[in-house]
Structures are given as structure tokens and as C-alpha cells.
Length: 94
Image (cartoon, rainbow, N blue to C red; front, side, top):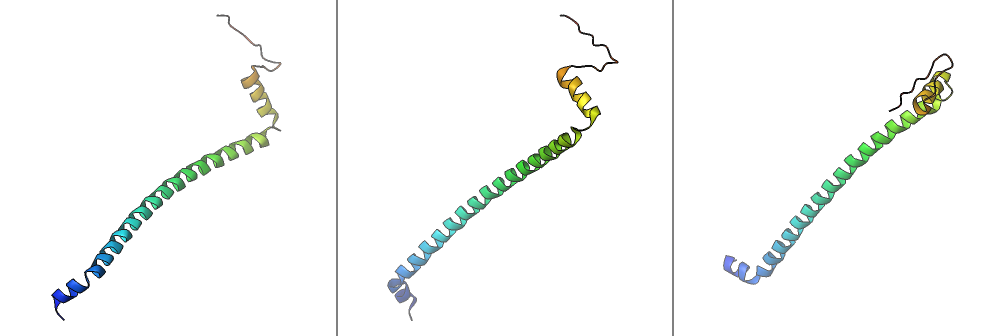
């Protein structure tokens, strides 16, 4: 077989293989972009999950401590500005 004959009669096969290879490379590039996007989304969701877990733990502690009289007194003092019977409240006018 002559190399000239192979290229002259089978050029279309080489062209087709080249086109297929280029399409394959493009598909790999697009797949890597999608994977990168999904990795970023996973990281974001893991951060949100951690934040939600911390918030859930904090809320559980608040719910559990609602029964504690010392906690209730602290919240009344902090949020409503109340004082216990043994204390005297002092306010300053501006």
C-alpha cells in the first residue's frame, strides 16, 4: 500500500476522526466546568448546613433552658429591663 493512496482515498476518515476528537475535547472541558460548579455548590451547602446545625443547637439550648428560673430572670432583665425585688433600678435622663 502506498501512503499517498491511503491519504488520497481515506482523507475523509482522518477528517472525521479529527472532528470527533475535537468534539470529545470540548465535551471534557464542559464536563470539568460543570463539576467545578457543582463542587462550589457543595461547599456552599456544607457551610449552610454547618450554620443551620449551630443554630439548631443554640435553639435546643434555649428551649431546654426555658424551664430554668435563672435563665428566665436573665432574659427578663436583658430584654425587658426588669430588676429583681432585691435590686433598685436607676435610670438616667439625657
